[in-house]
Image 1: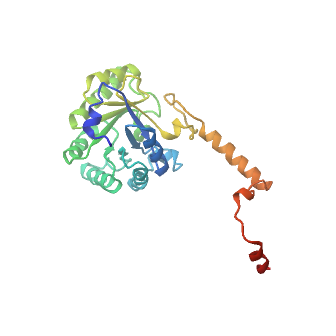
Image 2: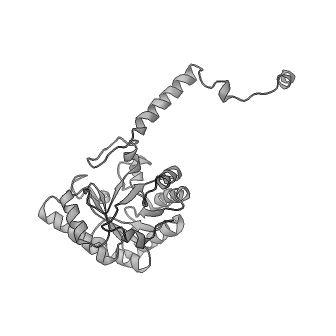
Image 3: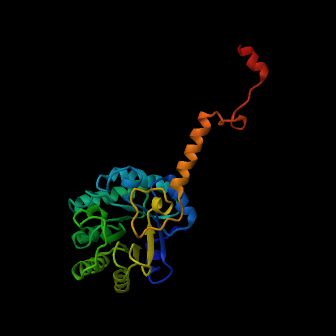
Length: 274
């Protein structure tokens, strides 16, 4: 059965939550078949699927389009959909409208938005309107340029304190979980110990209450950028190219298609066509 927010909260301090990203019907189908706890339709699809240089160009319409496909592939999964850049930075009313669209039009169960203190009012308003919210602190890709690029956050006392307080504030604002991205593992442990909602790590150490990785990174499909925290469990990108090269060679040599891949007809019918 599909998990609920209370089910996810109940994982705190217990068996880690398995969070997988998916961006389309096939990805949703595979993630659900693999038995994960949560599927995240991340705005990272901007780079891995749409070919953008960052997540900044991703729109609400993009997220709706892809989340609907994921839901068709994963009808029994708890799905979280990212709120893309520009959908909540312009104020609470705009954020509420965007979140309602993302939930209503996709069938997702929750939204995720990046940031700590600056987004607390938005998180409060969304949760008061019964829209479950997953938070996200540490490295926040939508604001990576302001943070100095895609690098570890929270290594000094000031930034570590800011991340810790951001996670605590998100809990107080009503978030049911929080993603911790690219922070020292000891800071990940400290935050996990000090808040009562599950922490979902991505480059935050093994003591978090769950882990998430990008689908294309896990399968070795996307190779333009590989963060230190990524572990590839397959090399499907290389295997796919090898298969396509073999296909091209067989077409050019007429080795494909063979009679096995062809349809037949009666010789009598053929003669009447001449």
